[in-house]
Length: 507
Image (cartoon, rainbow, N blue to C red; front, side, top):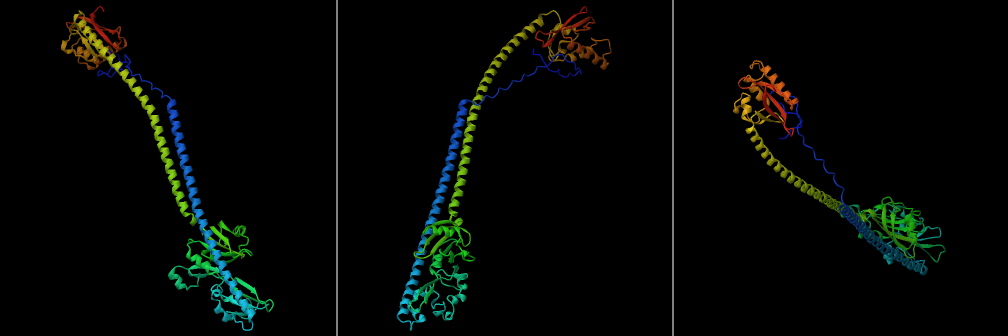
């Protein structure tokens, strides 16, 4: 019979005295989780190194591709603006050659017949000249105009006729480079903002001394070129004097409020360093960052530049770069996620193996316990049979109680000696109830059996005696015929219960 090593259960009789400690489950100390094995550490390091290598490769390839794409876009832009500047420089050279040739012809006419020389009449002979010149004049040694295709300029100083012309002021031109009405520009939407400053090409006359012939120069090719070639929303085309460092003509939004003096600018310094090429930096006229192509006008102190807004020119490359960075970031995140999953699986693989070993060990322990339980059950059956046999053959009244003081076995001599019918004793009956039944029969104590408090007090005293002195408790009482007897208690060999034996009064 198994003993109990905890607090005794509460009895219906109200007895709370303690005899044995109830049995307690001994907790199994959890095994310490073993450290990660060498194989798992090596595998984890390998996975981490592979993931790092892939991430580095992704970013290196992305960085190189972005740089290559940016360089490609920049190279195409630089080659384009450089070619445009070279083309425009050649056109300006041709226009200036046209002016030179026309003035050479007029010089010859003056030398041949200066008395009958009439610029107004000869104007019809040089239509190409007047297409790029607003003014054609002859001036004396004091630079007073003597003849001019503009009658109002005669008698004024050179350039006086331009006081009433829009040179140097903002002009709205059509894509053909011609002055256009505001209504036409508004309807077509092709207005070009431009400024052209006063420029003269002058040749000396043979006679009189210090007299000269000259023509103004205005390049229509500048605005034509700007109108015909896409330069973005903030492009610029300009013609500059490299000797004096002044702006001579400009087309584009930068013409609204340009800086005329560019002599000290980094842009002009770069343009003077070589005859043609590219330069990226702030445009001297409006300080906007652009990619410039430039080319010198052959034989002249002039340089032509074509500029594209750098941010606008590189927007395609920037968009591709942004997308590439996001792709690289996403790829890196995926690699990290995949590496994390692999590491988790490696960790779980070891944990699963450990759990499998624990399960197998627990299963083995369970089988051993089941085998031991089977043996115990077999032994308990044998013991129960032996106890039952002993109870039957014993001449004394004997009863067995478990650790909770419940009846688990008795013989007929015990029931008869206690003055009870055999059916009054039941397996599992509390010893309190047994004594209470005896008290009703008047077998214990010298008190009125109807005195409930006295009965319960006597029962509590007897139960306390069994609990406190299990090996020497003697409970005197009467037998069924009024004789004096005593119930003696002894501990069972395994300490899990009591044996009650009926003895004579001498006990």
